[in-house]
Image 1: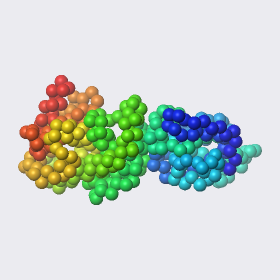
Image 2: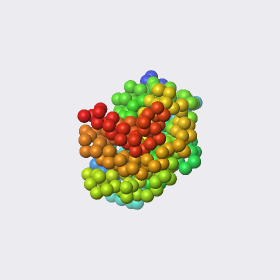
Image 3: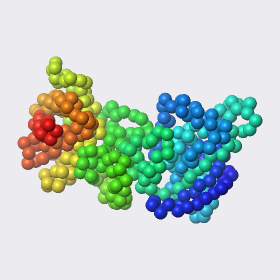
Image 4: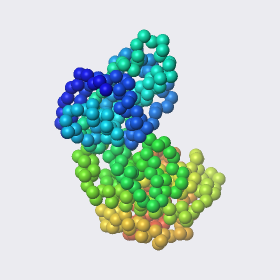
Amino acid sequence: MNMVNVLKIHDGRINADNYLFEITIRDYYDIVKDRLLDNEYQRRRVKNSGSVYGLLKEDLVRGCVIPPVVLAYCDNLSSDNIEEALRTAEDKLVILDGLQRSYTIKEIVNSYENGDYNNLTSNPLNNKIRVELYVGINKLGILYRMLTLNTGQTQMSTRHQIEIIYSDYKKNCNIDGVTLFSEAEDKVPSNLGEYKFRDVVDGFTSYMQKDHLPLDRMDILANVKNLRRLSEDSESDDLFYSFIESYNNFVKFLNNAYTDNLVNLLEEGDLNKAPFGNTVVKIFSKSQPLTGYGHAIMSLKEFNAIDDFATISNILPNFNISSIELGLRLLLIYLDKVSAMAKKIGNDQRLYFYHFFKSLFDKNGDGYLNIEKSAEFAYRQYERITL
């Protein structure tokens, strides 16, 4: 490995050292090739981008200078020997910015090895690119840098960025019957207990922030200190797992109570468009009910209407079973009405689910453990607020 023009500067915002250097395409690929297969912080290869990245491939082969790729080494160096650190980095290395460029470099290496560039007078793998390397960076620093870099041609979604701060929760999740899919896995929940990790993070964030609306980029930047506190708070681990376990217990209970296709409950003319979901699992595996649940539980705790997440699991046997079938039908009808009236459908659905869960688990309310009454109450509240 031959690194040249190495510059070092300390980033005081995230308390990490930043190195800038030049490296050949071949050496860079040797460093990151394993990270392309296993990088929890990044997305899959962007689809339908052949023309853009085809041009990038041609430019790199011709020696075009591109913006630096940004890497992070999630450990401290015992010395300034960054070459040795990169050779032995393994899972300590993260691609912060430049995943799609790295995929393009992989294609160049593969093309060269297949003999596609035999007509060239020089080896394109010897062309140099610039690399920035953050050393000693933690996950919050990674999140902050991803939020502020903005150098990529295709930005990572905000919700995926939020996953980063909670990534250990996914790794260590051993709740019986619960499976969490990361955004990079690109899987759609279809079975009981399956959720997108980002949707669960949405729900837990709504609980912590007491707000059913998901965080946007500026919210995250404004709450970096709170995220640092959360990431260092061991009690938040228990809260996160208690959150998803209690929610999944509710979904499992409801799914056991009504296992058929919900379309069977509907009558002609009930809906104007396709239902929000045609099974209990498909309805409640989405972000909207998860965020509504998170906000509702925190609100109920503040009013001493429930004690904690365990309360939810404990009271499920007391449900009004006779209310479930009509309640699920009304839930679909009212969600259909919300979609027709909403300016921002997702956010309005979150508002509806917030009032639904708040009514359903408020021991002092008329809708307590009654799906039918809670579905009606939530729509009345939604109309009162939005009309």
